Amino acid sequence: MTHSLIQIVDAALASAVERSGHHLVCRPGCTQCCHGVFPISQQDADRIREGLHALQQQDPQRADRIRARVNESLARLDPLFPGDRATGILDEDYEDSQLFADESEDSLGDSEPCPVLDPATGTCDLYEHRPIVCRTFGPPMRTPEGHLATCELCFITASTEKIAAGELDPTVPAQETASNEAFNAEHGLHGETIVAYALR
Image (cartoon, rainbow, N blue to C red; front, side, top):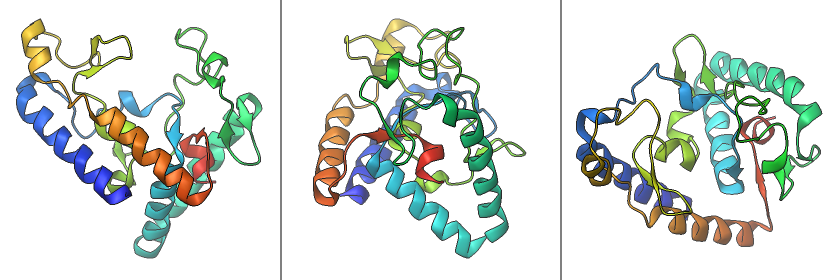
């Protein structure tokens, strides 16, 4: 299930990148979307744990650096974590917490770097295993209200038509939801977590 979802998402992203052209400025070293606390599914959490385990076999020192960053992140986030600290599962109303507040001046997690981000290179140490939200961020996507939203660094000079032309396949969120629900049912899981708790 995970593998097929990744194939679908990566194919949708490749298509959106091609249609977006120079308006999509995502590149190695651009880390804006790697800062800020964000929820991930249990399926995402399982995938990044697999990635860390594989990295431990291939490059133990790099894996140890990730674990050190995870511990540093947990030390900062744990007192404010809006959920069960033992399981790492977020409360259903986590979005109302200080850690996830939409307004940047109220959100204490806005500047928190993802522990998988290598600060020296500005790249993801578990890139092949990254969560779905990381795979889909950048190209225009529909909000729940039906508006097209983009990264604030991309599509700066693009017309409305050009933005629409680069839209990520709008069926991806529903396919992701179905895949996550199937994964949770198969493994007896529920809820969402964050990267630091998934990798502790």
